[in-house]
Figure 1 (tube, chains in turn orange, blue):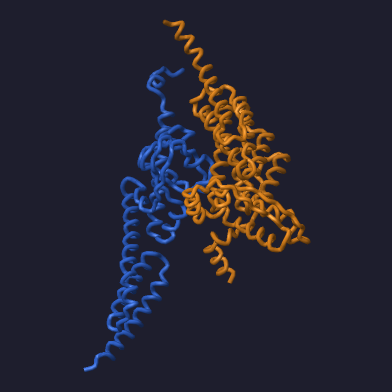
Figure 2 (spheres, chains in turn cyan, purple):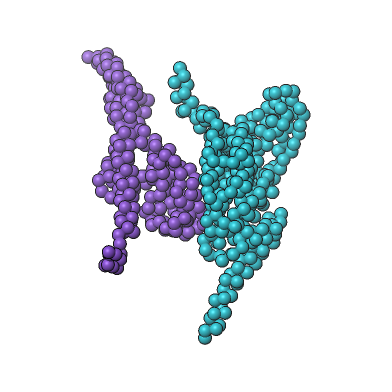
Length: 297
Length: 225
């Protein structure tokens, strides 16, 4: 009987979620401080999505464990910020947090009310891609993609709690969602930039690690942070690593650009600052060549 | 002379005969015998439906017969192509019919180093570069075919599109399904993957030998006494 149930579970794994709930082990060779952070990450991400997702977190942390150019402080920061990024705030997460806040299942339901503003594409993107993609196509044709939508998260009534539970239960399909695919690409790109920085400009690595804090929250603030992050990486970090931009102080340049990032969808100040930094770097690199050429008629 | 009772008996006998084939079809473990028995069952049920004027069954199995035949043809062609590839150029072109086309914009990253590998790609057009090594991959190259069989399943380099183009992709899960459905395909696929791996080892050994071999100048220099 157990074998039949196991086969059925495997057949329907995509619909009922994964069976394997064994939590991952801590990687070997972590200091006490880092081990505590990674342990917290395993706990948080198991609760957020499941043991498999926590394993993905550990695998990502392992890429930096034992490297001579990554000290404990940096490893701890990477591990901490990765928890933050991997537990991104979608409507499912907010429902989970609201349920945890009110202690549902452990005691009396406490009244709590919360209204959050999302973009329509953000809400639809939390659904499995097979459902979300056609809906997003229709929204785009109608021009509704960026439409703000207010969602009430309330545990003040029985119906509210039931709704929160339904929303939180969508987590089993989270890994098939459009949003997850975007988040996965984003986290991988951030880690890739950290890795390249360690090779090309080790002094700037801490600054690149800290850029993860630019992308936080949900709704417009989240989209703005993400757009600013990509602008800085595409304009400064990547060209420096590719050798196309001779930027000697990448850390300083990134900090300068981050300071210019404003809550402006057009990113006018940020783009201007990035252009100035690039022009300055190219000018400094070309200066000696022009001087040499001027001296050799 | 009334022949209706004869038709009835013939219909009952052929239905019984067809039932045996339905059971046999469903008891098959792998895809090719299952399709072959499926085709035989379709034929028997079509023949048995004629004398009994059972048109619903006739129409249903007339549709299923070409469908089963087409799927069997696809499966046999796949095995033939993989087998041919093992014995010739080790190409993976036979996977193309199972792949999905995707447009790539310049600057788009297909996958990152150390990321868990889940699919393989076939380059149709555009320019693509492995970021860490700086190697540019030619049109027609297959990327990530060995990742499916590697224990760690991790990408060893980052692949970036540097000039917009088109790629074909297939997930490891889809290839696994083909593998599980068809033991002959699985066997030749393993042989092909191993041959490509040995080919890579051979290339590396050649490169190593080139580095290890002393230069003509060094060889000509007098050895210390």
